[in-house]
Image (cartoon, rainbow, N blue to C red):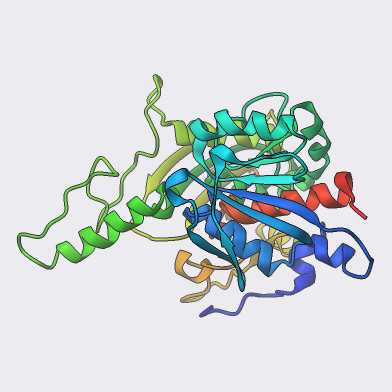
Length: 369
């Protein structure tokens, strides 16, 4: 990174919950049998990368995809895996399945896996609002993991929600949050590979007369533009992405918190940013908030009031942390703070959080060995 984070350390990242290998590596234990469903997609590839990086104790890993990708090579670190057809896969005897296949396919295959005794950790929105399915961010609500037994399924939150609640929870514990106003600046990778290709091709086409690329993934041009529209519009004028941030924050942190969101797609390949305004019940200074966030799990504070003294999306790519900058008091409301929140949406917003949930299961519930 161009700017060295303040007080960064392994301890700072994992003081709440250590990676599973750190807990088990000194013991003689059996490993887990892990499934990655959707292994050829952006999130699926990140799931495999992160399982390798964090040395997840897996005896066996199965990479699943649609039939058209059967036999395709994918990699978990240096290990080559052959994609298997999800439709023909036998889930019996597998411990944990990390799903990154979208709601429609999840609706078909997750119940099959769960019935076979394999715990499903799902990245789609299908189960997030099911009261019987826990919605987990390990730094925020780890105790909810025991609720997986209701359906043998755990939901991963929306990418924009995941990074925000990591920042909100330690502040909420100190001063109790009343209201959050958030504006997001979300990268195109949140829409998948086709969206990344569209940004790339539109940007190139702008320089070649006659080769302009019309929008297909998005309703308007994304190159050199911003689009205040993510997911479909609802009857009240908000979008479903904005509704997700409201509903998920309430489910993960505290149902009494009022949230209003404006979600915007920006011409950035990877990394979501958020401008967050928080109103508290109790007084909380910027200095104290900064100290609290520096000690919070999963967060790195980079907040220097000088040119470049903050983190931008390009600097967070490939990182595990949620970065917090621009912490300052809001004089227009009583007990108000503003902050800037940045994270790699393919990692903390999806794959990393899913692997952390798997680690949480290993520590607290499954406990093999």
